[in-house]
Length: 496
Ligand SMILES: *Cc1c(COP(=O)(O)O)cnc(C)c1O
Image (cartoon, rainbow, N blue to C red):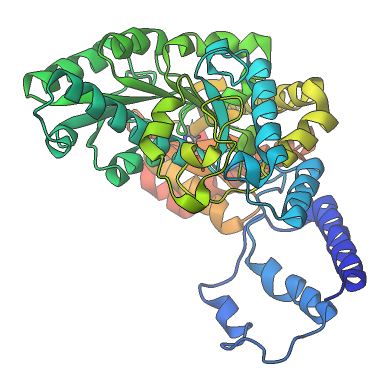
């Protein structure tokens, strides 16, 4: 393909993306294909002769789109938001076009330095402690990781290395392996699945401590676990606290956990993948009180801040722990600009892969085109839409809102036995008009409604509520529901 054809091809795709975005509301949010649908449409062998791009692009609508779950649809209310915006799409396109791999400073100085700078910008927008920023005097700094999962894992590995070295200074006769076998990590039973996975991958048992009735991990629970394990000869090494849990958006008691970690030389990682974005607004910053105790702090730009996947902002207070854990030298990687200066980092020592994309470009585009105010307005609007949904649920006596509406999340259920909520959820999913996921709160089944898409408006929230409430009206009229719980249940459900 020559550059003239590229211009045509790429412009056609840009038009396709703009049309797709404008009309995504009209596509059913959930795909209705059967497993394996695509194998019948795409031949088993690659074409021997190159095809025309126009033929290929025509197949996107025919072959690909039927199998897409439309995450950017205003009817998508599952999980948490997955960011998407035009400036970020263009930033990613440019990054791909430049095609540099910025693993060290010299491999593209702009790639490293723009990343340092946008991480400073973002850190200041959130008002996290200065020590975390590259621009501070100390060894702190920020890096863009691919995901919050990687950030949790990378910090676990750094914690492991730091603790092993620390124990060796006290007890030089111990072998590394002996020490590492005794290390143990903690998180709450509400933390994201990726936290437990990081323990598995890093060969460090991850204890899932019991959260309180509000879904929070508290200090006394952590302290008790740490003391129990010490008594068994284990070495507490790593704690992952969550600000905004995936199930109910609960906030662990960071001000209680922090001092315990600091006093016991335990690495404290704070996972604020979703809710952390809200700290760009002053009214939410009290929710990160205690972050000053943390060794590392992570917020996904790719969730709630309009930067397309993948883009997870990780700060560490002391980057030398990452560099110590990950530094592997080779002659071909040496260059004369190697530097200990966290302002000119070689990011390959801060992450798992060697290669890295120029992700800072899309962050730069989004922050410049939206401005801090634009991003704040986005968060505010989505919170307001969630509050509206919460009010609609609360006005209906058949339903209850189970945990306070937090950020863009509403956890609700039908009053009474879980079986009704399950039935409602299954019917909603088979109708495919809106997409939601469930969670379990104090053994109650709840449906999570999250304002996800940048395109969601009041009418979409009303559409979702209408879909849910009229479905209950219909279900209430069915024989099955009447029989399950007797005639009373049917009457109760149809009261509205
Ligand atoms: C979404 C989420 C994660 C996982 O994020 P990835 O970037 O997909 O790895 C981790 N923790 C919390 C609290 C989350 O909400």
